[in-house]
Amino acid sequence: MNQFLRSRPRRNRKSEVIRSFHRETHLGPEHFIYPLFVHEEGNEAVPIASMPGCFRHTSESLLAEVEAALAVGVGSVVLFPKVPEDRKTKSAEECFNPEGLVPRLIRSLKQRWPELCVVTDVALDPYSSDGHDGLVAPDGRVLNDETVALLCMQALSQAEAGADVIAPSDMMDGRVAAIRGALDGAGYSEVSILSYCAKYASAFYGPFRDALDSAPRGGDKKTYQMDPANAREALREVALDEAEGADMLMVKPAGPYLDVIRRVREATTLPIAAYQVSGEYACLKAAAQQGWLDERAVVLESLISIRRAGADVILSYFAKQAAIWLREGR
Ligand code: PBG
Image (cartoon, rainbow, N blue to C red):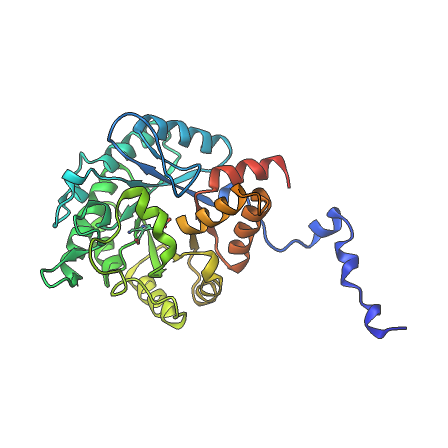
C-alpha cells in the first residue's frame, strides 16, 4: 500500500459537520466596521461610480443605512465626509469646525443609538485644497509638526461630539502621542485611538478619492505613506504607535498586504484592524458585475482570509452585505 495513504487529510473534510469541528477562523458581523461616505450638497444620496452599491449619504440616508447595518449585527461605522470645494482651504480649518458635517452627524448618530460605535477619520485631505493629509508648504513639502497640531484640534472636535474611536489616517510622525495628550488634557481619556499604523501609498485608494474628490492636487503621498515594497518598516511603526498610546492598530490596504497583517499580529498584543479599501471593493464588484466571479463567494473568501492573516476587525464596504450573507448561512 502507498504509505502516504495511511494518512488521509480528506477524512477531516468529508462533511460540513466534520469541517466545522476544526474550522480555525470565524467571520461574523461583530468583525466589521462599516465605512460610510457623507455629504451635504443637496438632499439626495449620490451613487459613487467606481464603487457600485456605495453612496455619498445625506444625513437622512446615513441614518437609514446605519439602521440597516445595526439590524444585521454590524455595530460600528466610520464616517468620511465630502467637503464642498468652496470650504476647502490650504490650512484646512474646516477639519475642526465643531459645527462641521462630521461632528453634527456624530451627535445625531449617538443620540439615536448610544450603543453604536462611531469611529472617525483624522486627516486633512477632505478639507485641504491641496488634497494632502497634511499642510503643504510653498515648496510642496508636507509639514509634519504643524499638521499634528491641527489633527489634535480635529480629534478634539470629534471627541467632543461623542466619537467613540478616533482613527488618525494621516501617517504624520508623533500624532498618536499628541492626540492622546490632547484628548486626555480635555477630559476625553475614555476615547480610543485606532491608529492607521501601516498605511501604504497605494493605488487601491483611487475610488475613495473619486468618492470624496480628495486626490492630491500635486505630487503623491509617498513622503508619508509607506512604500508597498516594505514589511519590516511596518514593525517600526507598530513599536512607535504602541509606545505612543494607540489602543488598536490598522494595516491598510488589507488583501494585498496579508503578510503585513500577519507580521503585525506577531509583533503586538493590541487588537488589529485591517482596511479592505475602495480599490479592493471595486475589483471584486467589477468582476462580479461582469459575471466573472461569484460575488458572495469571493467577498466572503476575501474577508475570512483577512481574518486568517490575523485581523480582529475589518473595515469593509461589504460589511452590511456580508453580514446579511452570513446570517443566511454559507
Ligand atoms: C485619507 C484616507 C484615504 C483612505 C482612508 N482615509 C485615502 C488616502 O490616503 O489617500 C482610503 C480608503 C479607501 O480607499 O477605501 N486620509
